[in-house]
Image (cartoon, rainbow, N blue to C red; front, side, top):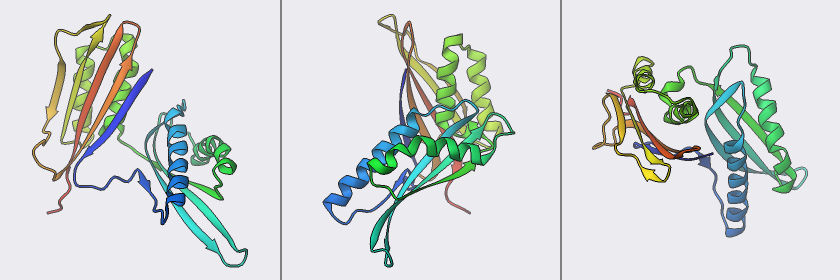
Length: 221
């Protein structure tokens, strides 16, 4: 069981949702569509691939010939393939099977899914935090955390910080364990710094995981 929070500490706009409502009725409808699709994708846990990020785009299109208003939903997904022989059509089919039950319920005309693959998953703070959470049942060691932070630097990252602290058997941990590799700029908004906060609920207690990843400068010289 886990709870997650994602935050982007940079000047970029948040691209998780993209839609505009001209009145309060459309706002209520689009917000409901956004929340239902978002919750379905967050609960979806495939075995052969891993969903790193996704964005939802809702469009309204008027058809002159039929006189109908179509609500089109575009879902952009960034995935990491655990195996190389996975086809894009298989991933699209899995995601459409999850979202098709909301098509008639939320009055959606079309659902389009666009897939993009990521070669370096260690540049995403969400992947690192959830990977550490999955390894906690196997009693992850200090060397493993150092290896994960160094893998972020090897794959093109500028800096990585991993912080672990929580409660075990109802008592707080005596110290907060932290691993830092590279450089993380916290005093400026010029760098693409992503932070992900993940809560791991295990048998012995609750442990919080916080990961910072610096992908470099946003300003092109």
